[in-house]
Image (cartoon, rainbow, N blue to C red; front, side, top):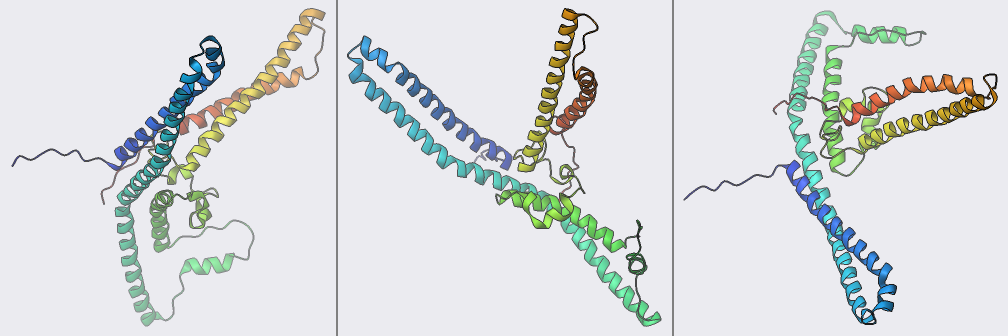
Amino acid sequence: MTKQNVKVTTPAEEVERQRSVLAQWEAEAATARAELESLQSRAGEEVLDDAAAASRLPALMGQLSARMDIAQRAIEAQRPRVAAAESAYLLAEAEKLRGPVKRAENALARHRERTAELLRLLEEHEGPFVPKALLDFEENKSSAGPHEYVLARSEVMENDLAALRRPVLVLEELAAGRDPMLNPELSGGLWLGQPDPAEVFPPAVWGPDAVVPAPAYLRAVHAARERVEQIDREAEACQRLIEAADARRAELGEAARVTGEAKARQKLSSLEERRADAEAALESLVAATVQTEQVDA
């Protein structure tokens, strides 16, 4: 028998395929709606110009209404398929990240076992042992001012493991249809400043190449665009005031004064710097592709 080459669809390709089907039916619904509205808008004139149109138009309108209804039903049936494909894709991406997590878990378990054995031997030799980091913490916790603590190796390993687990949990939350920003397990150390969400959300859901953009990413892009637009509106207001001042001086002479002109010129200069920063922030969200090193499980 001759082997047949069977194309295997990747989860990302399946997402695009299901979205394409949805887009086709959305386009069909929009076309039927536009045709029906056009027909309805000119129906009165057609009936007055052609009496036969009165018997012809109802059938045409009925057909267009039926097309709209069928397309809308197809859309409603297709949306869960798109969601299922997106969920499967997100879980597949999460699976890719489990290898490093598992290795870190095993390394931490071995380290804890070794530490427990060494502490047991030390206690047999010297008596009860209290880590220096704990002593430092107890000594300094009641005093004012910043303090530096040397983390134990196990604490460093725990922090590294938590950092590896976060993207997996983010993907699992999104796959379940939940916003990771609302997950209490993530909210403590993720959204209050450290680390930056862009460093935790994997490229599958964050950035211009995201197959399934996370709600947090879409909100970040929207907020960045809003900042640029707000600065533009403020700059336009300043420019209008400056132009009015120039026009007044042209009419009344150079000695003419316009209230707020100096402040507007000063603000316009600062707005130029703010806009450059806002544009850079937006550019980093919508144009920069995050580069990550792929690690096999």
